[in-house]
Image 1 (cartoon, rainbow, N blue to C red):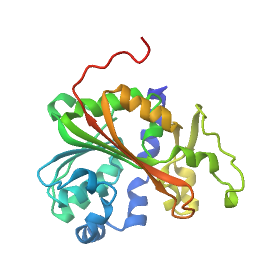
Image 2 (image 1 turned 90 degrees about the horizontal axis):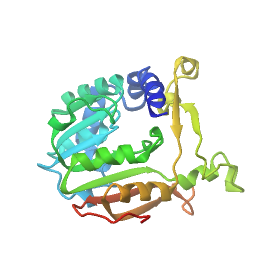
Image 3 (image 1 turned 90 degrees about the vertical axis):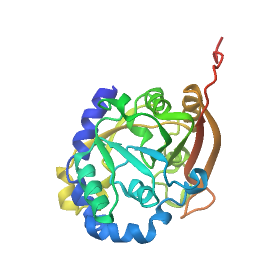
Length: 262
């Protein structure tokens, strides 16, 4: 199942992503100017958990267009991005060059990073916004996270809150019409589709995604031997009664755990 997802998602993310980012954020030169001015704003959810990034090794898994990675590099971090889309890589590398920072960008399936062992380990693994639904099995991606963290290294994950699915497309939140416990593999629009003119969207491939509950996410991170330090729920900007996304912080602890089910 994961291989099927990876093939479909690589194809979808390899078609017109560069064009979409230019449409949304401007040319790489234009975005670089904005990032040099506002890079701390783009890191506002994470700096309190990172401290000063200067001199730290950070790997941004599924780092997409690179805005967060470049923002970290502007603060002095040594940043590597892994992402499946060559269009994403092209846009990020050009933006980093325009911003005057170095960015190591690996275009690969994050579960099959070429010569992964040569990358060594990192102080921080960052994953952010719309990423976990690309995995059919959470244990595989969190195993990568653990391998890439040094001892006492920190994992920071920000993603859309699973609860929000229960209220999708519901005007005024009068009643839920989503399915929180949905385990099906689903076909959907690639995330950047809405940034393109409507007459160009028919050329885009579809992504394959699988939804996860909060319990499944937390359990999988704990099972990977990562010690959860915080689970911060961020309210929706349109309705602060409900969560829109969350940030989870976990540290790598070198301890041996007893079986959960003896």
